[in-house]
Length: 391
Image 1 (spheres, rainbow, N blue to C red):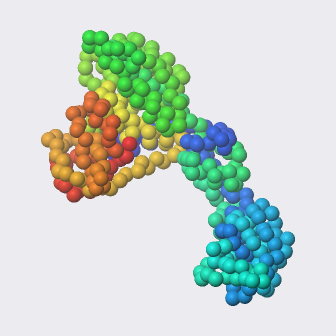
Image 2 (image 1 turned 30 degrees about the vertical axis):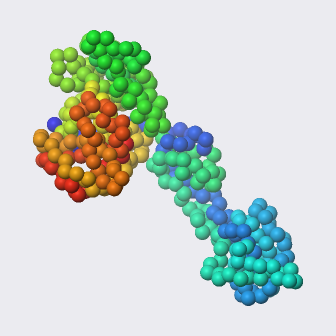
Image 3 (image 1 turned 180 degrees about the vertical axis):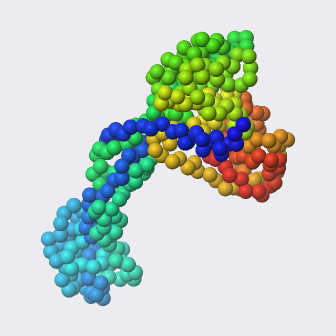
């Protein structure tokens, strides 16, 4: 049984080698850059006014100034500013030659002879200078950047209309268990609704990827084999839940090996999610997650998500909040790392949710994240620092 850190390291070391493809700016969100990108122009591309005001010479601030023109954004100035002169200028407009400062409209008044008088206290130039944000030829974004909405204006500003990204892996999803019925059916007798597949499909979609759903495999070895083979024929990564414990009808590990895959691990020293299984073969990967919904949810976040990103050459470092425990939290068994759902109260402290175990999916509906006990740790005292993984 591997420690969580060892399982994660082993998993990431077996990331798939995906090819590159071009993508347009409008389709770039959630894609990973394959190459460095450089600025083709400086930003700002010229000295420009940071506000509405009057462009003039700093040395003339104690004089009444003659206004010689009005400069709007997008129009080049026509006149040089000489001593005793100014030009009305709009935010973002090009600074006229001769001017070295912009005075705010609010800091001026009109004299009786129609000239501009400065009545403020000038502390800065109020000018955005050529290339102060970035210079032509500078690296703007590095290969391996996961493109978010905040990167889109940067890409647009350097004219990056099409560029190379890593291909996204094709991901298939299925669940196992004769007891399962789809969410649109009402369970009868010993049946339960299949929530795990919908959950995993949603987690994949949240990453900007499209999962392919292959339904439910019953507790029959050959039917499980056939469905897994069909799913693998259409994907690079197969995600499935259930059938990985020690029950008489848990066929998944046997089927995985029949399909020609090598199982790298079947147990992780983590709770929930101990029977998480990872296998590789034929240039593909299989994650067989436990059937209990909290287990599959957490193990997707802890193991599967960083693996999918790694396949796209993105090193995902999930955000971790360091917060104080709002109360004493304890557990009985300490042989495994244990994750539990938590909420952040109005004081900014962490309190545990009511949690009945890995089948208690309703425990995470109002949770802000998960915190953990380390191996051997039985008690978290009030005031201790906890590492919280937001969800």
